[in-house]
Length: 537
Image (tube, rainbow, N blue to C red; front, side, top):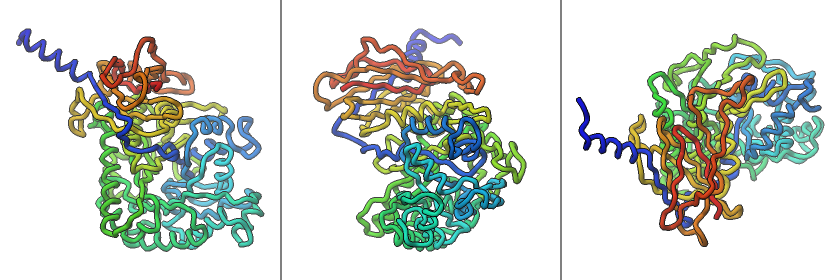
């Protein structure tokens, strides 16, 4: 059946409408200021994240402490807020005392979370000193699974007390006179999960975490605490756990943790995968509501924020799981890339595609648009394990595709997030009808810039993107830079042999002005692209 001229015109008009996006940003209407810790990361004693990632002693590319120089430089350049350590599932069966003192005297232990052998050649002193070298703050998780509340308090004493006690003097004996002054502490990890060593019910965890919090603050009253909220929506404890735990701990803690991973299972299309930003947005707001309900019920006045201390794309390339829902009831993980009881085996070394990178950019937009409640967010993880950075034993370092949107966010995502009002084309996704172009704008008045991040999730057509800025004095903001990450093959990856297959490119902006209060020129966003637009105020 041949379409009539009228039908053809209507189809063309609908296609054009789907590829237009207008956002209004007003200086006086903001989401909130971006905490420096919003752009943070995470490293765990898992696979090659620590060993051969951060720490690789005796190699020509490592320093005298065994820290890889190339990794140090890249991490410095990212300008991260905090790095979370030592886990993760690992922490729930870890004794931090095994990782201190002379390395020759440290014992090897069975690591149950990932069925590996832990050499304990890298421990709390090594991590805190590495953080000093790369210019980030450590965020330490204590073992509230198999560990005790006393051991948690003793770890704070070892790290933060000046001198004159057993544990602080032992730190000095071990080579670090000054305290580390670790400010941020996590009260365990994913304690609602049956896969966690020492898994507890909400009630039992709340009691243990409350007593640990008391003792840890008796050692150092200035520390900030993160309580375990529920991590994954498919768990039956989801949100009920948060409310139950906060009933006991609201007055003791400063943050509630939650985690978010998205994966492209067989039944999720590319467009649906790109819509993960909306799922994260919902997930954040669910935790927001649990915090607000707890605050109201307890008649508290202080604010508790969200610590999204794990987030990323994780396609489970070497875990035998078909979807995130399979986490429900799981007590162990079956891996395909390594056998049991190896030392730092090469596991969970995801190979990321352009599609994964675009999806990570979208998740970053959701974090930006929720900075009023999200104060800490840690991309999980940093090196080799589901990570933006990969190393090999020949001293090479590879920036995976997801490195680039994350680096854009850590570099340009500083300032105040402006609320955006959207109008334009939409598309149908697993998360409902969503804008084809999703965006976030950051005002950095000190630098005299507005930075706009935009994801065009139309896989086949460019989008006309028209941001309108209101309330800024003087001439209309002028577009001075347009950086884009895109390409013809969504499955394209970077490899050591071809490291620049997927890298950002800068598009010409000559003559392109930013939109003023009356609206002005639009910018073309390539199909399936992550974009950074910088306007001078």
